Length: 194
Image 1 (spheres, rainbow, N blue to C red):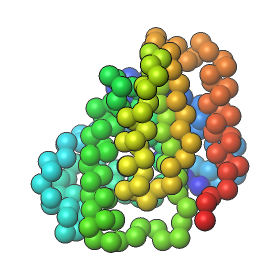
Image 2: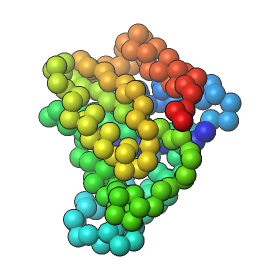
Image 3: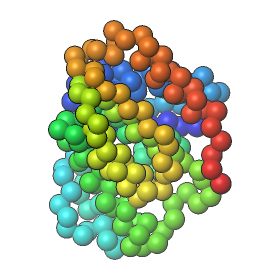
């Protein structure tokens, strides 16, 4: 089971990445599990140009670091979208990745190509925020659900943490780290939906 973590924070080893690595520790308890991290902030991903170039092929015509990321995304059995919340939204790095997945939307909806038939793949949103607003994660959840649909991933239960204001706040909260570890462990026991 290959687990791909798309790290959307511009900060290395910040709260969202610590969440991801702790969840991964739980996942690695499953025999045969592998984990891969992609730090978007280190990649050159041009924003989607809305050109329609993918409409006839399902492939983006822009050639940059996203080209290899399409392959990694397609190969993942589980995909974890990892992002801090900025202004009640996902990070710019995650948004650029998501927008470029328009090519995968075109593959599915315009060209009718089903990818990895009969496989039960799942996408998960891991997100944290400094504040604690009631609707803090509403927009990010809808965005993640839309992305996972385009990528032909079932939507798994998200892990959403509030009130992590300082850069390393989660590292000082053993309870929150335990929640993340248990979340990863729980995923490994879930049965895929038919």
